[in-house]
Length: 252
Image (cartoon, rainbow, N blue to C red):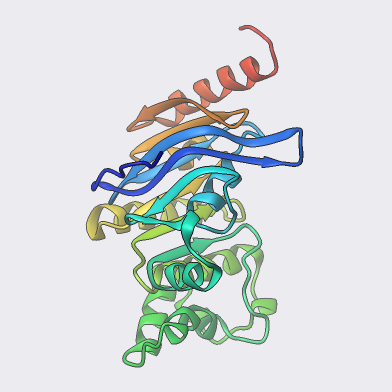
């Protein structure tokens, strides 16, 4: 049986299940859509399936059962070369580990996706503009090893946004940032969603970060437990506490 993906969804999971070995079920029969141009925060206790959801939706990990769609394309049916092309041309990624190339400058790291996509015009200008957008115009010639962890994260965010991808998958994008910089980056992510129609799917543990999103999804034990629209930080924090207590088997 096959899912009929709604046209308004940029990303959809249909009966998505991901198991590891015989005992670990990271995703458990999840059906979920992410509307084009939306900004969604994915939250939950440690081990709830947040990062697995992100990786399977992006085609970085394979589902055990079910389907994952990006822009109407069933990524579960793509071969590795097709997945690579899809990710290069239509998706952006922000990883917790940054994944910057140590021998390239900040500007060269940001320009790399453009060059891999065969872009030739305005590559340097677009890389500089992306770095300026994350507050690193004065660090464009620095190597990753010459930057702080927070600065490296901002370079990674600039790299994810420089190609203007349809969907940006971000795993704890503000985890290494100070409060003021984190707010600037979250405002930037909200802006690219609202002003440019790009879809943002962000895993976070921070209720304040979630409050910048249109929707907060809460996972526990591989399943969606709740969601909040236009979430406020206090409301997110309270719901997270409830879910953590429920998961631990403790009543409030």
